[in-house]
Length: 324
Image (cartoon, rainbow, N blue to C red; front, side, top):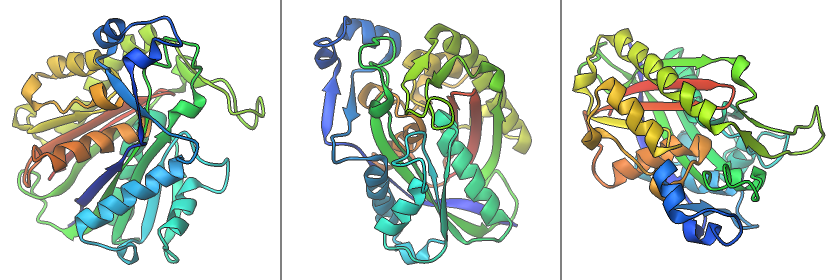
């Protein structure tokens, strides 16, 4: 059987760091308040020359280098983003051009913070059906461009960045306890929660970009239950017990949500990868940024069982089990 194996990851961050103390200069808040409620200490903010496309290109180039591949080896590019450079064409096509890729195809996926997992799942489906052999999956965001910098409940939470992973089709034996690659994925969405986390603009309604709006307490109230339910389904699909997990790499939205979800699942703190303190919430870039960090610092090793998880506006949410 065919399975999708991750053969390289990479990431990119803007040049500018923005600390909590710097934020206190233009909104009424404090470093202690932000850290206590979110775990965030700093985030990266794109300058006028840095965009979703430019950051995505950097992350893609890093993933290609780390995989030992060139863009000629890639058949498809899937970009997860809620902050594209333009309404159209797709930012993925712009990344394709910037990488010098003349063949294959590229497109965007929009599932907000869950976008990277939705994009991985889409790439996995293309690989399993034999349509392509290798897929470059990117999560890239510049949420700083859609924030209300006068709203202290949201502007302290988000940052910019990009992460990428290359998936390759490999023939395996069908043994989830030993085979490398994506073992299971579960995706969900429910539009009844659309007013809990959204952007108040769009080309078909206000003809403007709009700004991010969030009912933080209500998002928190739903997050833990939704996240843990879909994770349980992911484990059940392949008959693996959560106790066998090596690393939990969740969406980096809020440290309290991460810790509450892990506790409910019985995952020990020393198995959680947390980067929210350094990156803030980078939406679709969050999971690949955290994954790349854990791979590059040596925590994630070949044969490890990895759990990815994310939840975003919509709501959308999903989880994925990968044997590294």
